[in-house]
Image (cartoon, rainbow, N blue to C red):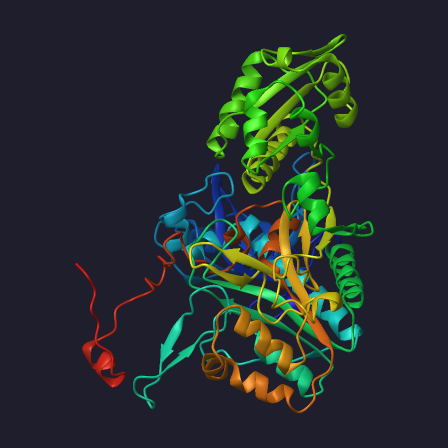
Length: 590
């Protein structure tokens, strides 16, 4: 690339083509592979942009050839030479530079490399701990370069769109007051204020609301968020999000903006055109898919058949209904063998179900060992409700509503994968909105926010939400892509009196509210606009766009499953002197 030119190189290792034949060039990079063919040494030289084959031929330059004999994998070199077209039949169509090679007249060995402990090869993947310990070598692999360069393009496209919509990129602090936001805080001791601690932000939530009170109208940030929680494939101690807030907007305004943002990102980076995002209420999503983050790349919807099947003589279904449960079924519209059905029964049991009932739809009604409990009229009603055709299977889960939905939502995804119903190349966004504002925590016997305590109740619940929390719907929503949550948003509470009522409802005293959130409540006394916003997970978005489930594959220096970095060995011990300076004593159980 022209703008890669420096004192050490005229071109990148991915920038040469037949147009440069006979040109004198200089290149710099790492020795990727070395081949000695009858005294002529061929080396693939690698940098960020790709590979160029360089040739050390004693007939072209004896001195350079003599020095090249000592070159090994991962040595760092600079070379000068002449671009030549490859011999007939020797072009490599898999390389951008595959039509040419460079005959070397001058070799400068910048640094020698020891034998690498892992292969710098996309075909020979080292285990996770080794990859993270030698991350600087792992990142030399072409696939890792491509993923992180793609991430850069996604972030660049997002910034372009935010800027085009009159947003201002602003920074919020990384050392903040510890406030409850759903996960444990990472804390930082203060040396100059002994015994006191900063927290690392779980999100910029309170500060972006204050920026709206300050009148900045439209804020965004590519923000680091830090949460001390158990890890999994799509969770890290520190993650990045597109964080934004908007003033004088409704939920529809925010969702329309995000839809435009996503369409711009996908078009710019993948040349993909997204369809309009469907919108489902939380109730509709749970009813049809058993989850609030459904994969809508395939149909296979759930059907609540409680009212029909309890009219049968099947006692199991009657007992579940009498104990407050529900019965739902799924119809994969495909005949399955008994061995396959038994496999799905085991799968449901592994997901926490007591079992899975099933019936096959035959030409003359339902068939299975429980069909005898279903009179003909009940069978017809059931088949009609589900819309089942002969030759398909009805699968039933009967349990408490939460468990029933959870098991069937997982079974739905497994069936989608097993039956080839999912187009892996498709991107299907949707909105899920009208979530319950509160959830009851039976362990501590109190109401808690479903998302967070700064979300506004829908207008019709403002007067009564603290008297009867169960039916209250919040003005909040999630963005879902292919069955994975990409981010959450809401219209915020901008009235301090409503905010204090929410805090009281979830068990926070006035004193505690002032201690933890007094600065926000105080700010609202001086006039705050109606506002709302979202946080969108950058790591998840990039991973999904690249067809990856593990977000560590798109993070430069991630932590392992124990929240450790094997490369720099953090977290690490502090010296006695450091602990003394911070007024800290450790008491670690053996």
